Amino acid sequence: MDVKFVNILSHELRSPLTTVQTSAEILDYLLSSDIMDTGVMKKHARRIMDEVADMALLLEKVLAMSRLQNSQTGFSPTMADPVSFLGEVLERSFLHGRHAEKILFSVKGEPRPALIDPFMLTHIVNGLIDNAFKYSCNHINYSTPKLRLSFQPSLWRIIVLDTGIGITSADKKNLFNSFARGSNVGHIQGTGLGLEIIKYFVRCHKGIIHIKSIEGKGTVVVVDLPY
Image (cartoon, rainbow, N blue to C red; front, side):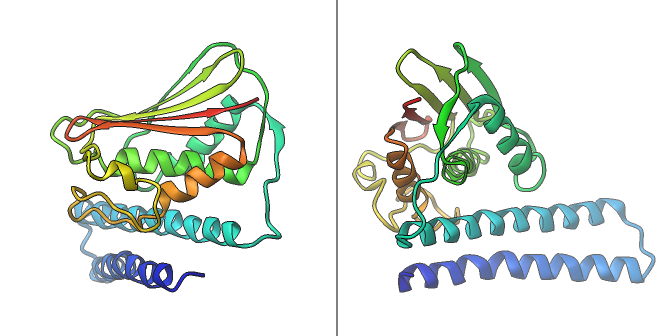
């Protein structure tokens, strides 16, 4: 695995692990001292859940990178109902943990079965939704991100919309490059590998990914996939 990625991974894991340890120690102190401050306890329990969710997403990227680099692990598609499949992905990934609210999910058109790789599609959706929340939740124009499925005659479409910080014009040309991060992300954590992996998995499905974004206004990601 790329040395630079290993270094980034180590750095990205260090911060959440420190937070988890600190919050766990505070909870242990409160419980052992019989100080039942439920507000403080809930706050630190939530921190632990959030950081664990972040680490789970990061480890998912490690698995994805391994899959990219392991020639013996390829595209393994199966016929599935995209609506039911994505509904289950959303329940597993976003009912608890990082995000306090669930993404708004809607379906347009007549659903049809599609040939998908469960691991890859799960990573595509989780990655796009995590980005939508991560880069919009603290923005002044924040509104709940949206996930839409659109079934059309020749393809089905995944659309993820947010009203976040957007992408600068200068950064757009590097969106899918390894370790590339937006110049306007500030202190928001990330490895700069998410979109590269997502694009690869989309291409494995013979699909296309489009990104439209305006700095300070938000981002729309469109993934077109054949049935």
